[in-house]
Image (tube, rainbow, N blue to C red; front, side, top):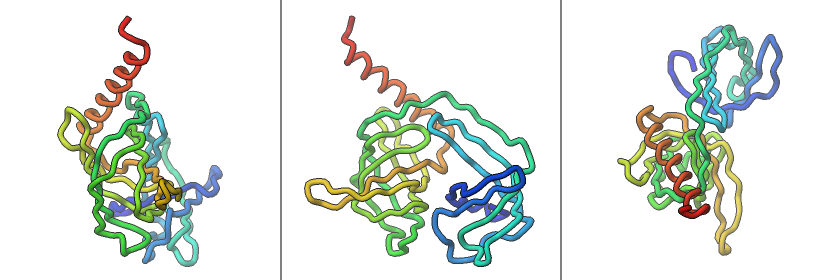
Length: 205
C-alpha cells in the first residue's frame, strides 16, 4: 500500500470492469489511503498460485478506515509455483502476535502450538487466544530435517469451538512473507511427507 509498503488484509466486496471495492479485514486506527495513490494487489489461492496487480485508489468511504475502491490498470503478473499439497501433519511452531484488533494481544507469544494442516500458502492451528481476521503473526516453524522456518502471516478465519470443555479458536492463516528458500524447504518436506504416507498406506509392494 503506497510508499509505506504496509500490507493489509482485505476481501473483495463488489467488482466491475471500472472498479473493485475492497473491505479491510478490520478497521484501521487512521486514514491510510489517498485518492490517486498507487497500491499493489496480491492474491493467492490454495494451489500456491500468486497473482499481482498494480492499481490506483479511486474512491474512499468517508471515514477512509474500512472500505476503498481501486482501479486496476495493468494485466497483472501470475506466478505459478509447483503445486503444493495441503498436508494434515502436526508441525510444532511458536508465534508472536505483531498486530491485532484486540491491542492487548500485541506482543503475546505462544510457544507450544502445532499445525493441524499446512501448505506453502498457509496453515490451520488451534489456540486459546481470541484471534480475529486480519490479525498478523510472526511464526517460527520447526519443520523436520530443516532449520526453523520463519514466516509472517495473517489470520483469514478464526472460529470458536470447545475441546474437552476448553474454549479454543480454530485459526486459518495465510502466509504473507516467507523467503523463497524457506518456501522450497517447506514444499520439499510436504511432498516427501505425502509420498511417505502413500507408501505406508499402500504397503511396500
